[in-house]
Image 1 (cartoon, rainbow, N blue to C red):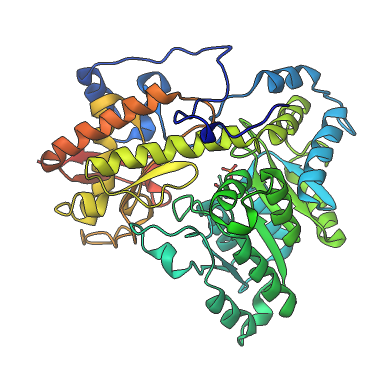
Image 2 (cartoon, helix red, strand yellow):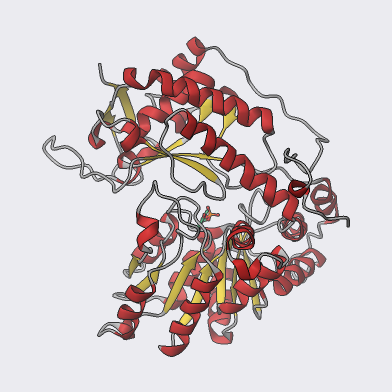
Length: 467
Ligand SMILES: *Cc1c(COP(=O)(O)O)cnc(C)c1O
């Protein structure tokens, strides 16, 4: 394969692929969009996909497969046990991660649920840079206490630093040597740090976490959903790794830990799939026993043979540096555009999404009137672009007696890019939508919740705009 760094010779970073199969995008009028949102009580989760022009709701399972992956689908072997597809999946993941036991699951949270069930007891403490929300929910469901120990730079959204996903090593050591050390079954590092804006973790930080885990005799696990994007940032920002192949960086990261959970809907280039990988024999046996109960036989784990094959191929493609460069550039391009319109965004741009800081952008809308939601609705009305609020609507707590909600720490709006799905002109279009958003900034209004469920309210809450 010819591989060279396009950006060294040309200013234009191209999509390093051509299009073989297309899907029409719906083009709607503002009046139609207003009607759709009203019908759904101003909740973008209610919209039908054919009402959305550019869907940036999530990068999970929404990417495009390559022609090689579609070819792999045809190779899918649907044998219940020991299928050839499983062997290919196992081989790619064994080589990539180096872990002894590769356990397929239908998606990331299934791996988390199994991990939490077999290794976490009531009252346990699980330290992390930041737990992703399903990971946190699974540990909490197991009556344990997941805690986030993000580094100082990571807490400041707007100021750039190269590795804002790093864990605070001092705080981690304090916990590991403290009186509750015996309650810690393992340390879990999320790469990249989704909750913190898709920010990378340095290899230096991972190595030091490993040292601490060795010193205090703890297992070290990764939530490695975006292992390739993390390796890309390491190659760009960590001097020692600037000439190292992306795949080698990823391999080294996996080998620092004792196992991982991965949602293959992200850097697996898959529409569905996950894995739980472990070195420990006894844990793996317990995991497989539970897998049979909830997911399926250990050589397919809730996936069709064709899925395993598509993932095996996707996992080979994801570490292509031309692809990763195009991907990172799409996001940083949007961030530069947003900043040029005075829209505050998390900096530097993360690996998979642009995050608008709605608290800073709309200081006149208080958290209990959901400034992030106001932005998300407005960008849909302006251009049919769907994003998600990650602020007080998603993470705040509703109070009794009509008291305002307890606000979330941040009021973010995430525009996540599906992999290999949109082109430069799509990103230019989104930039234009953001430009119009900035022009309308002073006209934006807050929202009021009319109805909400007790849990995960942002998915189904009914709202209305305030006058
Ligand atoms: C998506 C994600 C998960 C959960 O994976 P699913 O496939 O959605 O169940 C866990 N951790 C991180 C960091 C994620 O991004």
